[in-house]
Structure formats: C-alpha cells, structure tokens
Length: 211
Image 1: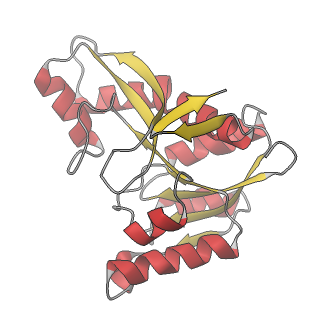
Image 2: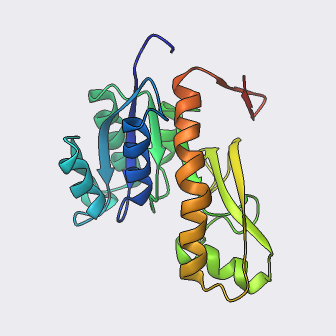
C-alpha cells in the first residue's frame, strides 16, 4: 500500500484523546501515507465527534440502539465503511463489542488500543478506569498499553505493539490512566497505523509480524 493513501475510520465512544493523538501524528508526519476518512461514535454527544468536525472530517453517530439486532448494526457499520472506502478500522476508546459480521467483512483490518499489557487486565468488563483499578488492586509494578488486531473475542487477536509503563507509589486510577495514555497509548497507536499504512505488517498463523 506504499503508493496508495491508506484510508482509516476511527471509532470512539468518548472524548477522543486517542483520535487527537492520531490527528496530531498525521499533521506532524509521524503517520505517513494515511488520512482519516471517517469518525464514528456510538454516543451522540461524544466530544470526539466535535474534534472530527473541527478537523473537517466526516463524523457519524451510529449506535446499536438504532437497530433491531447486532447483525443489522454490523451491516450498517459495514455499509458506511464501504461507502467511505475504508482500508483500516481503528478502535480508539470504542466501548462497543464489534459485531461478528463486521469482523468477517474486515478480517485483519480492525485494530484496537487497550490500556493494559494483554493478556493481563483485559476482556469483558475491562475498560476505562476499571482497567487501571484492576492493575492497582493487583499490586502490579508495571502496566502499559497494547495495540492488537480484533477478532471475535474481547481484547483478543494478534498483538501488534505493546509498551510498558511504570506504576508509581501513590497512583490513583486517574493518575495511572493519564500516564498510560501519554507514555504508551498516544505513541503506539499512531505507530501501528503508520506501519500498516506502509504495508509493513502481516499476519501469519494468527501472529502479527512487522517487516
């Protein structure tokens, strides 16, 4: 995909700090060969949609609540991504389990950022501050973030990048969340998008390889 601009869709549920990190990385040349074609949120009032609109990027509100079942929701998402000719779907703080039909239609073309070192502190129910609460409750000295390809299981699929972050004395979930974002999430997610856009990532036998 070296000669073709990679079009990505960013899916968000909240403020869109990871979306902002992607926008900044594209502007600063950290992510090359890539444009954000679309931002999608399952929350109508998500500030991420405002970020997208300010950046001149199409922004859409699509929620499972608007559809009779997950299959219809998944088909609607697929239709929108196809309409915008999306090459890669980036889940950046997206708190919706991705419908199976979407995973099948975009196999190995969906990545997610998770605020822990998978397989620790991940799976159903581990999102947002809950992840960092779990890290602190376990007494872990190290945490971090993971970029992985999405499959049918929550926080599962081939791991592309991980970055460790130190847990410090006196950390609260909020303080730890901010450090993981700044030191890990905002660095490895743009890097992952750049690697994929340059055609440097392949998945062989369920394992992600970087060339």
